[in-house]
Image 1 (spheres, rainbow, N blue to C red):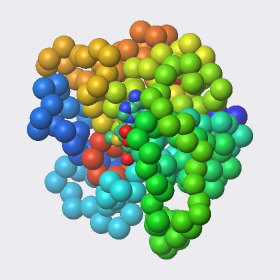
Image 2: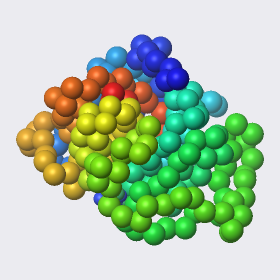
Image 3: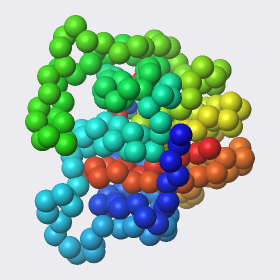
Image 4: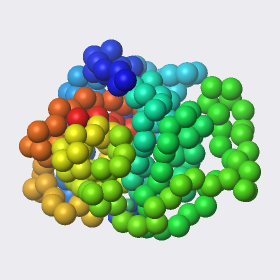
Length: 222
Ligand SMILES: C[S@@+](CC[C@H](N)C(=O)[O-])C[C@H]1O[C@@H](n2cnc3c(N)ncnc32)[C@H](O)[C@@H]1O
């Protein structure tokens, strides 16, 4: 069962803007407040402890926790543009039948930090995750229950199309719209444009934000 996400009750640490901001001709994503998300700390506040934004490399652990909180572990998950496969690995540890679709073969990292125990965990060299070594195409989504795109630029529009066509929820944590089949008009917020494209496809959108540096705002489209 999919748990509802309530925008106003989500706690967010801060928003630091898109990493490609300097080279991107489109406006940065809206502020957390504009998205109806709870901002964490005043702009001038020095954050510490658990409120401190984590390094971007922890995005996989944070997103896996978010998925576990919001989606049932019986779901078959497609991790689009999943790179080395760490998100898929962590989701599989949580019981999801997760699979990467990614054209570039990349091996799993040798270790990761468990944020709950604060301990480093080794991934045996013999471990691997299921991989579809190809470009993501809309039809692929039919055999999955949940489509995830973590910084999967170039595949965001296709994921939204798949979510609408097969009525599957889609979790998008976009970093930009480079490589997409269409582009926002210059001067338009690329994030708002993606949201607009989701709504145009008949999908409802729920925003969320994770506690890491970089482009840490996403949305569930369903
Ligand atoms: C910015 S990286 C993000 C990788 C990973 N999700 C992460 O957060 O580190 C984008 C990934 O999308 C992959 N990619 C590029 N074109 C793709 C396509 N058509 N279908 C699926 N993945 C693609 C790239 O090879 C790359 O690994």
